[in-house]
Length: 336
Image (cartoon, rainbow, N blue to C red; front, side):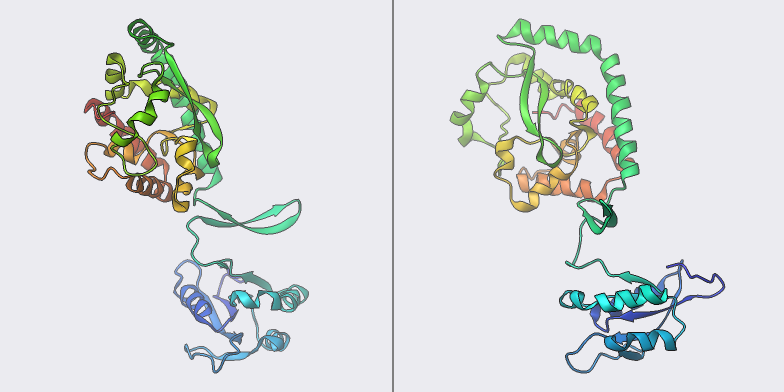
């Protein structure tokens, strides 16, 4: 909090002599960048005597007008229990009437994993809870990097893409490309592109192979899948089958780095906490992708946990590190 008068610390009071109010007081007074002088609390704790935390109780909430006129106050912090929110309207109107700045604690529902902000929706002020902590401006930079990298890669790799297309068509029946509906940002379906690595009726054979699934959870993976063609095996080993997904990145369906896009049938089996991996664009590479062959835990729960770790720790620097780690993973031929 910035003081209205730069030559002294701001003088504030806290409405809420409760654990949240006391925690707020400690943080305000320990701030190095914006020192604040908490002169006392307004009583909002009707059950018994308030806890003594070294600050005086200036009075009760219904006497806030007297408190504000008696003391020189730069601001008021409201940190009352959720059940008291509906009692704050007179106090908030009082602050507006006499021209005192005020803040309402926005952690109404406990710990938030994402970012809490303030929006005006058609002129209506609202507290917003973002599922991630990422600023929109930085996300625009990430999108710009995706467009530049995917466009440049497609231009440079055009001869390689044509060669792979010829090999796939010449060695097995069917087209060179395989499209499949996957779930993108917030679960929106899109058609993901891949080079075809399996026989034509591979999807129809999956049910008969379900008991050989080597992943624990709603994902199907097996190392020696009989549906994979000879050329397809080579493409998968070096992740070359995923090169057409650069088009998905260019179109905005995917990002260069992000959780791998799941099938709708897989998402239908997710636990609720696993669905948060859909709150960002899926990617070509991710922590799980570069950890394959190193991380022995092959459960989907572990995969999802790594994706959430990426979401919570995300930065442009982390994206760069994962891109750089992807090249050794390709050279190790750890793809399946």
